[in-house]
Image (cartoon, rainbow, N blue to C red; front, side, top):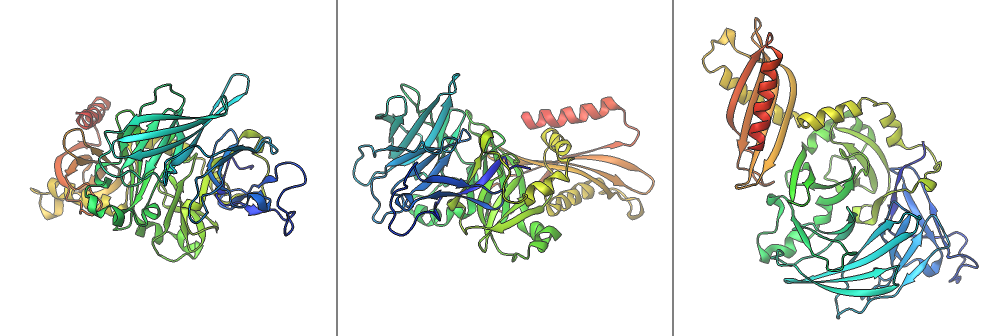
Length: 477
């Protein structure tokens, strides 16, 4: 199967046709692609004169944004290049805009396709200083830079953009310690929209900022997957948490997965990779499979399905997620690649995933065995408080566990648990609800049981519907 997307290295490699001392190609712009199915890394191939370029962004329409001076020391004022992978000879240079000294900003790319197939391309830099921000925009329509002053009163601490993503016609600048700043660079009077990270990840102390930023990109990443922004965090106790920006206007995140990495390590699929049981570095979320996350460890790039706990594929790569990006290819580039994708081969044997995705969308995700065991024991202890030893309920069949965060007034975490319990002569369906004030990664979850109800095996449909309605109303109240 031809790849729908690739893992693209941000650093180009030199063309084999570029001999020593040859600065410019004899014809064309000297750029091509070597595409491979994931997890193998694809490469941008250039002549020596272009080898200092870095890929900042890659758009699904095939447009790549290159920066010409990110690797210089000391850093220079960066200029940019736009390259259309569909039209390989289409390299166009964008001169550096006027900027204050030591202010380079972080650039992103937005591409809007018109009805005639003509692309309107916007490159935008954002610089944030205290409560003021500057947006520098270059449009292919005008071939000029425009400078726009913005207010950023919601930013209370020093903003440091790691990179920018294109989503919903806006650019989203990511600060891995604070949140996201969104802006429509096409607007005549653009406004900044601040989306904070979930409360337990936000910066709280100014004097510890530098220490908290060190190595942050190894443990956090924001990616675009299945049309939504996803946040992945590995905390100090090495749990992998995946959040979805469920409502970007309101800044609401939903917690989809909270998995101890020990469960990943213990799975036979991980053991088969022969990778050590060591803390990996985050790379990105699969662009079309929102429960698959890519990691780096010992120069190998590998994928883990957080839903099934299966390590899907491993391939030699770089040891830093910042050196690669996930690029969804335009249709004309989705050609046969060099060798099959281990990930795609594995996925083809799991057609039932679409059914599982629907179930998950309605009732939440199955979480770690450890968490389920702990909460089910609390529910069973409540049910058995007045029972004799030979008549106590025991766990019979697991159903599902859903955990979510609510921060409308006071930050709390809630859990809904469902399972079958059996006494030997009687089987019941258990609905249990829990809450905790411990929402930060460094805090131990001290769950409290808020309600626990049962239905017997001869329940009618209306009773079950009423029970589910009670859960939904309780969650939304």
